[in-house]
Length: 188
Image (cartoon, rainbow, N blue to C red; front, side, top):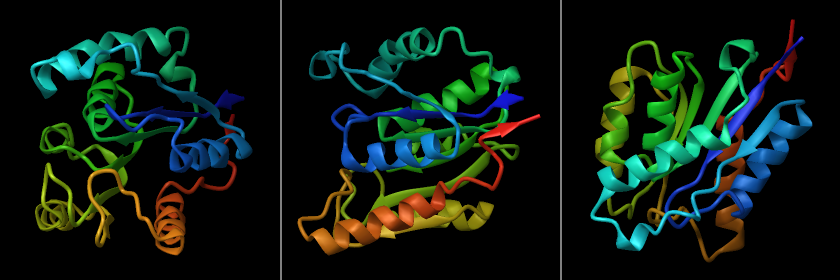
């Protein structure tokens, strides 16, 4: 039986320890997936010149933390990524040569360049106050490609609400986007 894999990619200030990422990890663990939560804490992001340098520093970490995993031996592969992690998730899909199901949380403009016709994007999520891309621009991109786009009104790049009810509703919608197909945890 092939083990299915879910990889969680953090952002520069949004770790896999955030409650949303932990709920996503738990959802996949309960479905029988091997879950890898990447850690970028060794990278001094505040000292780097920009996104390109940050991505180049993170890529070797991604490969190191996934060492020993053979993507061709996996069943369903899912990448859930946040901000800088979205660029890395798009890069890793190309690097591995295996189309993963992608859920992009607050993708950066550079992330859109990673998406090809063969990409399997489960959805993209953005706040109306995102500082890197407008919700309208992302919606237009997604509409043209048939990609589900979830817009979180009144929140920024961190996708956080002060109101617990609004936060819970957003989490519910995001968890639905990365739902696990029946029997996907392990496949023969």
